[in-house]
Amino acid sequence: MYFRGWATRLRRYLTPGVTAAERTVPSSVEGVPTGTVGFVGETETGPSEPRLVRGFGEFEALYGGYGTGAPPAATHLAYAVDGFFRNGGRRCYVARVAAGTAAAVRGDGTPATGLAALAGVDEVAVVCVPAQATNPDLAAVVTNHCETAGDRFAVLAAPNEDPAATTAPLRSRDAALYVPWLDVATPDGGGTVTVPPVGHVAGVYARTDAERGVHKAPANEQVRGIVGLAADIDDGTGGLLTTRGVNPVRSFPDRGVRVWGARTLAEDPTWRYVPVRRLALYFEESMTAWLRWTETEPNDERTRERVASGLSNFLALAWRDGALAGETPERAFFVRCDRSTTTAADVAAGRLVAEVGFAPTRPAEFVALRLVAETGG
Image (cartoon, rainbow, N blue to C red; front, side, top):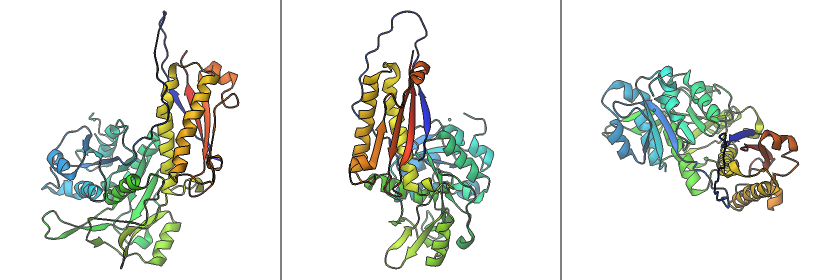
């Protein structure tokens, strides 16, 4: 059983007098978007604050496309964004940095730059920093960003070396690592260039989310918009990489190039699979956002019953969509929000606590979440 606790700080009225607030209780939890990607990298031009981009044409207009200088090309950002849209991505935010260094990616002190600026864009669910594949220090930086945010997942790439020698650079439930690099056509169509797979894989994530849902593994899915692979991976090497938590991209004679793995870099087997971890992030953020209506409600049985009903309806819909295992809803999830979860001490401290457990489609063990809302008053 795995428990996750978080608190939503709710409005407190500190001035004397009477405050009246009419509130409409949402009838059900609304799922948050999961396919929006945040890209960080170097461009020749463009705004310093993150901007929403809905197609490669918009990226070219804002950031200069592939550019003409060596540094922008070296970061592979334009190829990653292009690969994202070619593989079914629809929305991404681009956070421009001025130099390809770890400090710039973190944020160099300039406001709306790098990962520091991207932290303020709530819609981002997946993070890609193409320069991470050539800078060993950046894997931890990108992963730490996702872990700190608590609502996003990192797509990482290994260096452009022999895939068979690839090992996990770190351990995290909020990141996945992919090999090998991809061969793509140059903008003029006269040659090819080898780029990290992060943008293309992120596009596969977004496409799979849109077509099947975040619970579907972004694996056994074709990679579009490429010429080939920098290295071929056979069955033996692919199996070895999977046991290390490394996801291979493989070429099959009759099926094209496909993402052939869905492992996270987690040590805890509970979070071994990408769709399980991303499903939990989706549930957590969606439920937390919905719970904000409780901020001025009395912490009583009626409110707790509404919370339990709303969360149960949301999970029942997820079960009907195939996100949860179990022949019946009762076997797929549970929701508790009553006196057993919110004690008198919790009420006195201004907390409303709900416990949610769910059985992902794979593996089929229960994963439990502990939801805490701090009430006003």
